[in-house]
Image (cartoon, rainbow, N blue to C red; front, top):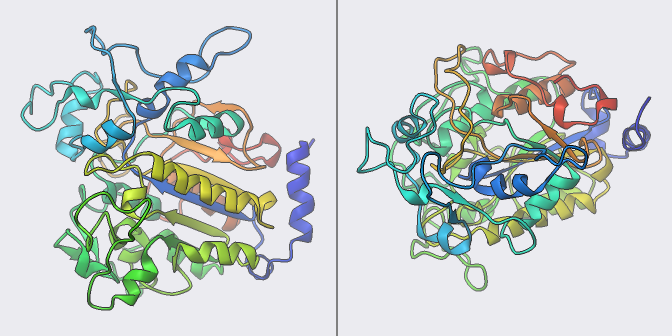
Length: 436
């Protein structure tokens, strides 16, 4: 039997007037749109340890999700309170070498001291938890986790920095370590990453398989919406000045990331077939227009400008990022697409913060080490409301769900971890029969 939410999705799926939806291949479930919001650099424990300690099963009185210990293992050290000030003042080292050292062979015991690399990795500030409840800077996320579906076994796909993990959303495999490259695209002249890279998926589509081209070849609409993209386009060969006034970039780097758009945050910008194509690369402001005009693509990724991603350090606070996510979710929930849309909120990587759960063993697909857990929340009518998933998930799980839903159930087409990762069924209304 379908649940009430699932029935509403089915009925809505029949009557939708979206031109994009009518021309695209019919999705396998009533979910006609997925919107993936990608924030930055926080582990599951850093945001949800205290929340899990207080969210108890009414029958067993035990936590329903797996949060971290109240003191650092083997010590009496309490966590730093993670708030706007502590987030702004310290950026943990999150290079692959440091994260591997801190994970310490799955013992998760070297985030404070990192004995193998003490001078650059371990730091007491790596052990930091946001508060639970209305006073927490992530109170909105905790509310979403309660009414939506929360994953407490969602791991960053590879130990290390953001761009290497972003690529797993797009190719489901290892491409390079850390932030080794930036995209050769609009905005590259303002990037602080000097080495650029482009994958030619036009002349060599097999070697350079990616989600975007696979969807395009099947007639499925998709786009990345990047905040600050239009300003970067308008700057031509120069660099735009960061927005001023309330909520402005907190640091004196007005012409480079995190104060302006960075193409390296959008993995589709690394590929010849999609780089700077208007159908696929859009300014964030266009999202509201597309929602109001009932022109939302089937598959959507959303990225805030750097200082609204919650990335720690350089004066960057959590609150502006939470406000960005709330604005995005509210816009979707008040649109015609709402009842057909699954929203997924996740993070590119854990940012070097402590998490107590050991990552899975090194991937057998690409021989790369997983990183710590990161938050993942499913939002919308199709989410499994109030559920906590303990299924092992990662960025490739998102790609796998997209393949399953829009490519006639044929997963593994990217020839990476999408062939082996779990699908997102544990986060989605069971009546929709999405595999787990």
